[in-house]
Length: 308
Image 1 (spheres, rainbow, N blue to C red):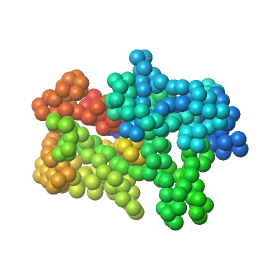
Image 2: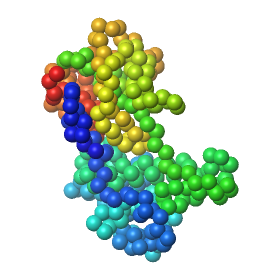
Image 3: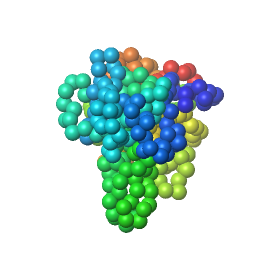
């Protein structure tokens, strides 16, 4: 889904988020094959991912893949099907390689280097393998579970219940004054000078718009209006879906950062943001922007480069 879909009043994402660029066919019927994916496996390629979500990226900024048949004649019980493109199936396997070499990178450091297909493959692999690591026992009866449907479900050995990969919705909102200032904040654990837009998880029984209003009020103590949707990006750390919004707030309202959660919040002028974008990661007036692999970067750049 691209930002052009949401063209209309106000700014939009400057481009599709970099981790939202999946191109492979991932239809459910591909996972329901009676042969357990054996036919797909024979034409397949495997992406190896270590426990920290790192994989090997070559000098041409492509994922390093291996023929699936190198791992056996039939799909490994630990393999997950990522999708199919141009009659080639793509799978992921966890590796015990420590990923310490320079050419092993995670999504945060390597995601922006990858093309659309590879970015989508690695994003799906990291999220899906991470879910399997933490879903080994049934949430109902506590019995062990096993992988089924080429990695897209787990079945309980006790009560036969099937469980599917979880995605936790989280909102992320760029709050502006409707003119030339944007509200940014930093968490205490972030690198020095790092600022970003506000974000938080959606609670049970809560709409996305209500979550935006609540999170902004909780984190910085201001009321926002004009809440509207911008776009989304999977963020598999470990299993979030970031839903981007824009809103407007009064810069005259006092900022009250949430104790222990927000170290500082401040209104930043458009000129500072434009300079920080040009600085490519270096701080400007004490502000370092989020990396361009994040939807936050796309939101901030879209706002900064669109005059109100």
